[in-house]
Image 1 (cartoon, protein in one colour):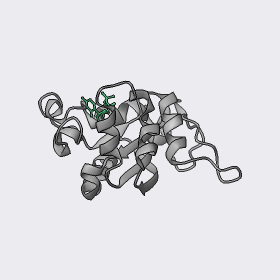
Image 2 (tube, protein in one colour; image 1 turned 180 degrees about the vertical axis):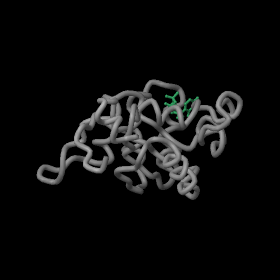
Image 3 (cartoon, helix red, strand yellow; image 1 turned 90 degrees about the vertical axis):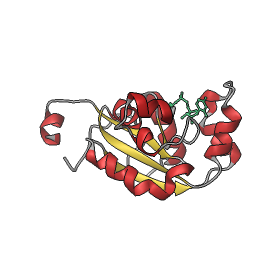
Length: 163
Ligand code: UDP
């Protein structure tokens, strides 16, 4: 169980999960799938990004041909940003999401979230940080740390008080 896993020193991580505008009306279903996994939601916020905020968030993709499309879509309506915690949260959440292209996800990972709720490679349900360092940056983007109000958003957590 989680308590034993902590005692054994398993790799607890935090990651940033984003529910994109295409499925905000189905966010309950996505959150149900998160809770069926080993991850827990420790922070959540609904917001609508401006074009330039979305461009900042996706800065790593700025040289890609799909960048403008991606930023336009990400800023087209509300998104739900969540901090997820658990064993290897970064890779666990990306595995739950499945391949970026929802059609490919339906072939390669039919149980994945993108297979079940995605439309194509743009309307593909969600985002997950690619690495611990990306998670640290992306968590800070949506949940800026405030001096005097709780611990900073370090990507690895060791001080969980609930398990
Ligand atoms: N994307 C897109 N068109 C493409 C490829 C990717 O709009 O042809 C978007 C898509 O929203 C994807 C994001 O760019 O989620 C980042 O792409 P990546 O391949 O890194 O996939 P992810 O990390 O989201 O699984």
